[in-house]
Length: 437
Image 1 (spheres, one colour):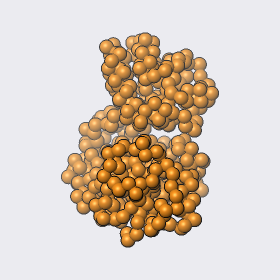
Image 2 (cartoon, one colour):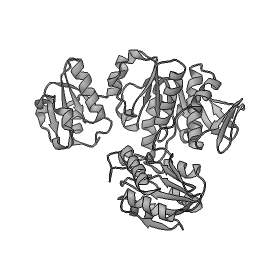
Image 3 (cartoon, helix red, strand yellow):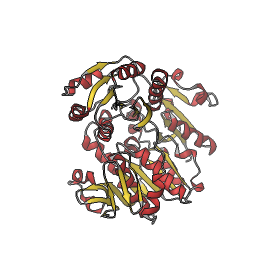
Image 4 (cartoon, rainbow, N blue to C red):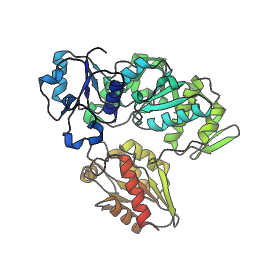
């Protein structure tokens, strides 16, 4: 790393790269597409101002640059990338840098939904059994902010944006949880999206994939080398084999004397994926399931916020696509009041029509994409538009009756009204706290 590095994007990832370079006395510059006023002043207050470029740039930005480090959310169509390609400057990522530092076994996980839950669950199992492990990457923990030598295993959550730019895909175990309709504003087609996700298998000892995806891989030569897990017509599949000692119903997973709620079929698949990984690490299934039974599920994922007057309030703000909302609707019983909508994003909402007609008694729309969703749905369910989160809570409260489930599962990004899904979920919970007694 002898030359000057150019960091593209100055969010969480870009900041972690800058801190790492500063610590290692590596020279760098930063370019972010936002205005300087939109950046947290604390992030740039201790930096030399002549290394910072915001919104606009000139050719001087490339003086001395021998490598580009691109953040996952950086616009791949931005003109600066054309200039970089023309200059043939190599592009790398924080993950590539980290993998060059780490000598520990890496477990890589990607997928449209469930990946943060999976990496958190793996971390929980391994740490509970005495193996120092950390989940990092797309879950918000920057890999360059940790010392890999402090751990026995590194668990990397990887998004398609990261996999698209990474050069080093080496892992001990790599897993894909699922692929569904999402991120097409960037990847354009599902075929390209799938190809990007499959990069995770480019260099790993154990490639693990949800068995439900195998039909999508009929044109790929290496499909026979993949290790499957999940639900099949023959039973539950763990590490490529049907395990007839594990059973389940709509609520519980059962193994020997263990029996606990799996929190939905989508989460049952997550559990099977985690147990497949731990079995590859020679951890007995009984130990894994015993520890998973005590796992505290992450907030904003079909989170029961309140049970009031025999009415359940669920916060599923993490739902930024239709597949996750579909899973939430399948998990809950009928008599659902569904709060749906958010930022506009290319999405197939038609797949929700059947479940809405079957289970939803009232549909409350919120966000800038409400009309976009309405045009796709074919439903008989009554509809009401809300102007805010609080308004949606009030409408739901006033229309709810005994044993109803009120589900805030937007199937949309949060950026029309909120910074992220966490802020959106907290706003929903606060509205319940202030208006539901």
